[in-house]
Image 1 (cartoon, rainbow, N blue to C red):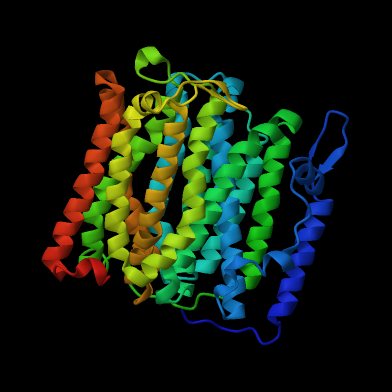
Image 2 (cartoon, rainbow, N blue to C red):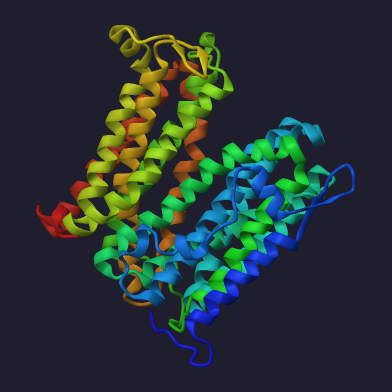
Length: 481
């Protein structure tokens, strides 16, 4: 990545401006009004949610100091914050979606539009945004996407009908695609090849942390202060992220002529990865979607009938292990061979998925308690199910940073890294759309068949990947790239 240094403004000055701007924003920008008419600042909202005033200098000297080039290190911090803010917004809308459904008394078809507007806009935005990033300045595209996200989340506080909500969800999908693609593309470009998977794993950890905190915090903020405060906090997260990217990330002067996708469409390595990813999308979508369904639906339909709190513990287990492990597994994949980690991670995911339907039998065989502190009366299957979902997070953490780094490797050499990630996103879409419909059919046969088919898709994906890889690059290819 070619960078231009601004000699007139030193990096220290820019850091100071960012810090002071964020502190003033949190202290003085009103985010909403309580019933008494009193303005609520970001600082008050965040403090009430257990978030204290942020010490940027201390955070910047944290575990991510292994990047020994100081300027690049601060660029990574800005991109990680952007990933966190964008992820926090996404999971907040997922958490509050039932409240919007009740608010607008949406019918079944309209509820479907609430989700379709988001996913459809995401899909349509991939190619133009990836093209804009590779032809122009990825930093500007990311800044624009963060600005759009801030406006969209502010609009959610004032939407007054289902039609307006569907429109806002569509714009949210565009912003989510822009922030996701461009932040990953910039991380992939900035990171040296020998540390690329590690850097991507750290970026993903911030996104996963946002998923955990967002799912836990959004409901509480909504209950205490209402929609205005929730979306005010989102804006208060996105604006510092925008400022950080603008001031700390160097301008992207790399640009390619023509259509960046044309040079990647028949890239042999990307085609090899695609042979795995297209099938693996079915596996992950089925398993990740149906684990909470298995935990929460009534026993008559094949589930365990756990209360929402117990289901949230099950879901959080996967996110937590994935978040903690990704930087570590990414670092190891940089050393041992990324394709090996894709193969092992995908295979392990299938093995754990096979075990999920048998968690009631495992719990009974081990004599595990049916009552868990803080959660209450459940069944002996609870702890094995939490353990299985945690292991699914570990397995996915083995695969994901290595897979992303492989896509980044192919795009970085010729400046088309955003398009490379765009292809990665598009390959995932068909399986992620078809899998829920397939899961619904399989659920009618028996809940366990959802996990059996999910495991089969994972095994099919890794075996296809191994076969194509070995044919094109030899039997030692797993250790070579």
